[in-house]
Length: 103
Image (cartoon, rainbow, N blue to C red; front, side, top):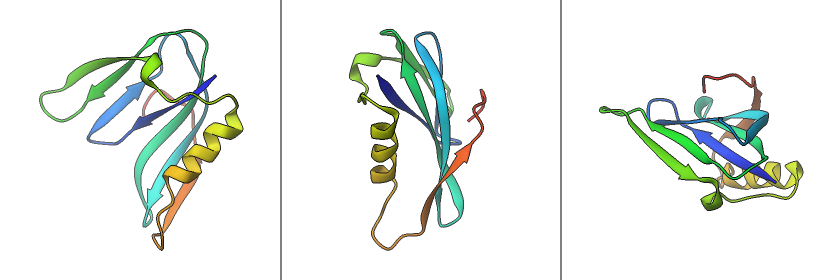
């Protein structure tokens, strides 16, 4: 199963931890500006995903993976990303991004 993890610079970041194997990352650009990074990860075991709120004061949330939408294939996860990032008439793009620890 695959899940999509989202990070938005200056707002929140989602960290890959135990039970998640990152497969690929994508930057979402809106009118040429990066608005988010998506990481498609292989869910190898039920886990709690760390979501850190970056607005002061920083807060940590642990979200059980059972609440995340899951996709049978990586192609299905990519199709969902394409659907999530399309807006009628708006200039949007998904650009491959490096798989690193910083969104």
